[in-house]
Length: 124
View 1 (cartoon, helix red, strand yellow):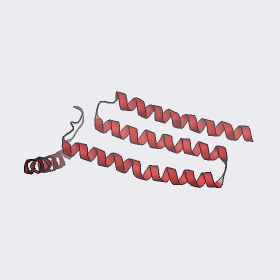
View 2 (cartoon, one colour):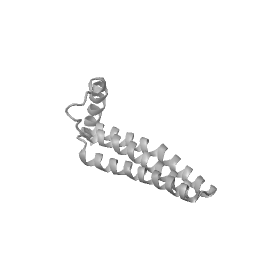
View 3 (cartoon, one colour):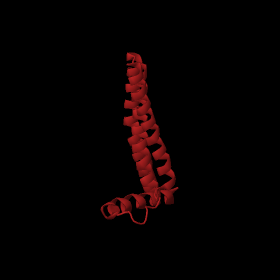
């Protein structure tokens, strides 16, 4: 039974590390800041969750399971929010989109908030 638990936890940890590797490759290879933020957030959150799950299964302890749950809950709540805030700040500062990105639905927001940011910079 111990061998089975070690195998399952090792597989989960390796898959989680694989997702973290995919996130780092996405950081280097994807064409746009916003697409990079999306890839990093999704892959790193999933990778972290799988690594924590593998650790919890390996140690098979209620205290470690509770700590793992708290860590994963904190990660899953803060990571997307942080990525959204960073992307929104980048949009307001005028970080360009990838040329193939369709921003037709987003044009009103871009015109409104980029103009407001420019007016604020003129005041100072």
